[in-house]
Image 1 (spheres, helix red, strand yellow):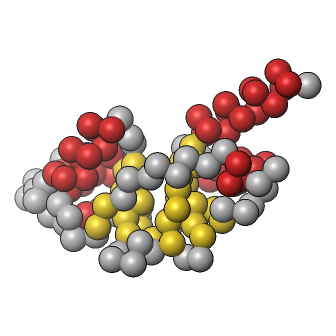
Image 2 (cartoon, helix red, strand yellow; image 1 turned 60 degrees about the horizontal axis):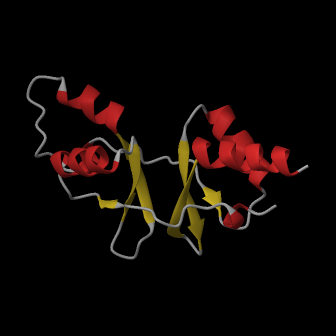
Length: 128
């Protein structure tokens, strides 16, 4: 089955020049641990996660007014909207991450999380 059938298309993104404070406020208010960082064309340029922000801010002289770009990961594991669900699940597990941005034509169209995958596999087992 294709990833598009379970994809969470309601994805919130942030810009690289937004502040760390804005990123934390967004993630906390939406109960997210991370979010994709995109450019003006909605193309992925990085990923920001709470843990990285907190590790950065603990250093003396680092402020929450710094841009997201200072902390974001630029090497991001992604999935394509038409990939097989099992292949994406394996990639998440092997990479030891909980969510990845999903791309279509190089643009962020959604996000897939471990929760989405677990729900899919649970529902599949109860249907059989």
